[in-house]
Image (cartoon, rainbow, N blue to C red; front, side):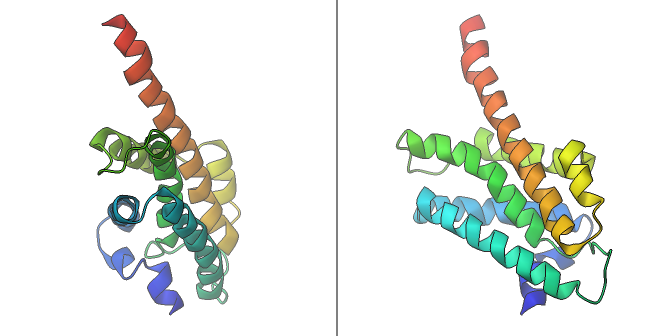
Length: 165
């Protein structure tokens, strides 16, 4: 059961770049939840996947300290959903209930992958823990930074750039 959870229902077994596949899976599933169940359910799913992630990763890596196998993508799902929560919250706040327009989810995806690969500051510090919690924490930090970057990009595109037109 933990293997199924940590590999994101097997998505983490796809090659090449299982982390990117995991992030793409997270975006697709997140958009479906947002469209058909709404933002509050998405937030509950994000909390559940984060808790399940910490538990399942700790269980899977119990006998393999220091490892961060590529097939574990539940951390990408949790982190990507944090990034997606930022534009989702903005649309929900404004009463948007249709499919989220592509710039929002696409920016969240691109920024998350950037921070997850680049690993600046707290992302890198969490990654260097070399324990099960670090496997989850680096992606949660990457998701937070990606969400903030997405909001800044939206503000630039819809605020500053609109004024300059």
